[in-house]
Image (tube, rainbow, N blue to C red; front, side, top):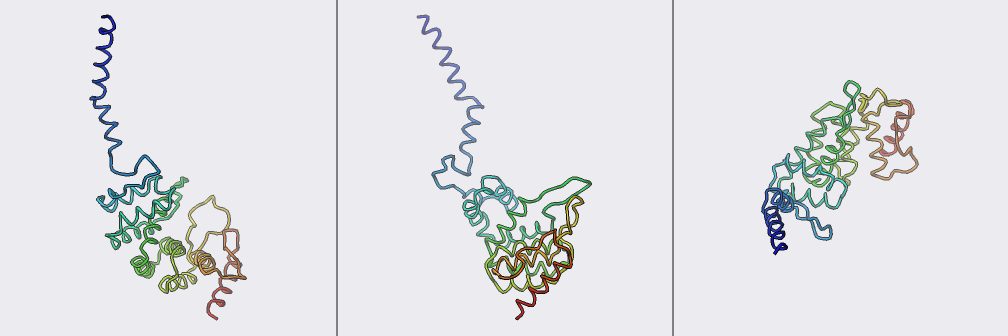
Length: 232
């Protein structure tokens, strides 16, 4: 009978734990909408549809999506496919901010914000291209224009994209000149446009990439040659 005396308290403790708030919290975590724990199963992304724009944007910034491009592409369609205009509008707001910014000696990175914003715009080119063109023409801010160029470089060929890149190829405003520790000359909007045009259209027999190590004279020489080449 001593065995019974011992077992009863143990069973009581186990039952209390199963019904405890701690146990229920663990079950609640597992029941939260989102991705399946079993990676072999397709992810349940429908919960993204119910989030507001900013909440969905923040959710897709999570590492689960950022490191898995196919999953991110699915998430973008589910989260924003039914509200493409509003989603691309929100993404454009992020293009107004520097990807990296040096403030009082400290560097602040918005790399993930930019990556997700770019991904949203590239996912819906039917809406985004017109919006990007309007944004480019509506501002003289080099950061905004430079970010637009970086986004356009990953989109499918379109006349609207080409028109903006040609405009940017003439823009000599400095894009990334606020880092005192950076070596070389800051990149300009036209330098970014040169790089995107050469890469996007596979132009041969030209300098492949303009970098901070190139002098302004060298950059201008290659940009002039590219403009002549594409105008012929």
